[in-house]
Image 1 (cartoon, rainbow, N blue to C red):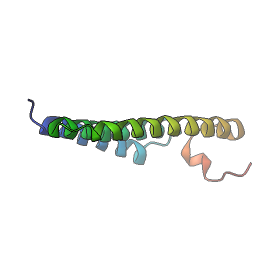
Image 2: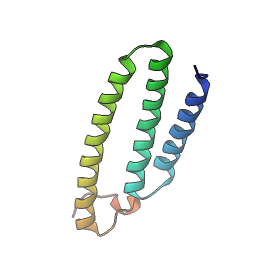
Image 3: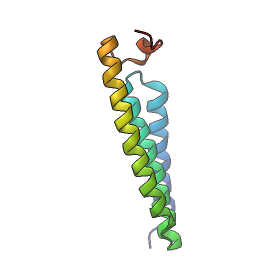
Image 4: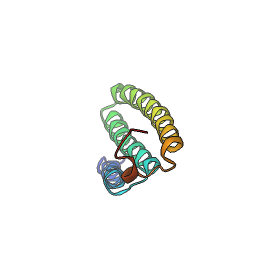
Length: 100
């Protein structure tokens, strides 16, 4: 059995990188990728504790998180494509108004 602290440290690092990407980047696609990184960090924690406690509840939560992440990517990319068609940019600074 491996020490539980190693995957938790990795999850904290991944989650921190995701938060930094959301807060510091201006590109909408990079922000969506950072959100996915944060979801994956949460998944890693759920898997770690499910394995540690020999319980499958964490793996059930991961399925729901993956479905939510897939829906978020689909809706987010559709919004980005429509905004790009209207504004000709995907920079967050240029999207302060959703009016045409």
